[in-house]
Image 1 (cartoon, rainbow, N blue to C red):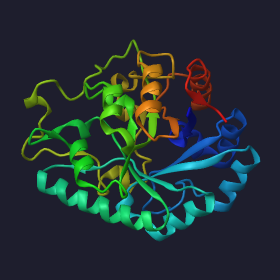
Image 2 (tube, rainbow, N blue to C red):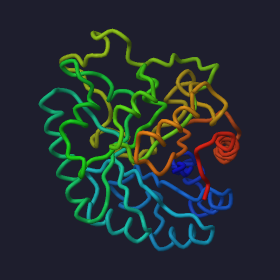
Image 3 (cartoon, one colour):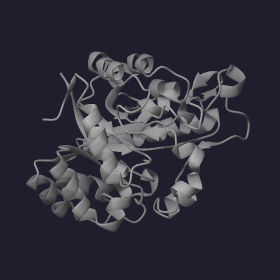
Image 4 (tube, one colour):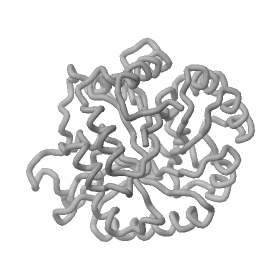
Length: 308
């Protein structure tokens, strides 16, 4: 079965800030039929993060034959879970994604695995799937084992699945195809971006030696619900704050050096994923709409995917 191409609205977040309904309409007109909403304002908004009522969001996408297939909710532990479920049931979505975590010690990680199981059980009983989306830091190790492997081994497959971000997997100095095979059927969604050939930042962000990759006492990685980012609804992070060097690492699909065809082939072979979702963190193009248009064109040169 071919992977269906989707789009996370994080890719057009600046446009959403200015005109959320107008941007949703543009996404639908472009032909993105499968959409992942992105709510980094879950403390105040249990929906899509931009104040759009569930009925209006669904009606808008319906007009273009598009639908919501997943949503990022951050910080999930501060969100009203009942309202999150109600909103997503109304728009027709059953995939709830935790887009990032914060990790420190082995004991803390084990407690978080219990919490993943607890939340996942609640969502499972509501007919929904709970997923975790990785960055590179989940491939740091604690006692010689990656945080991702701890999540894999200490959570119930019925209660936690994975949305594997292949870009961040590669930036942890790991082969995306090998990790797709490793996590296998626990992967239900795939995130895809591309790495710029002229990036000013190195691909590998976490080192190669066991000592470099091991989390040290007192070290904390990731981002939690008490961060400034979470408290301000994701509105305080700009390209200027990230810095030019970091933002140069991102480019549109098919314009960079990632082995995207091999990633698609591996996902089709080893996972139960139905969707490969474009996530464009930053762009050098004039607008984020220009960026997702170019990525759509780039995706169309690959096989093993579908737009219908």
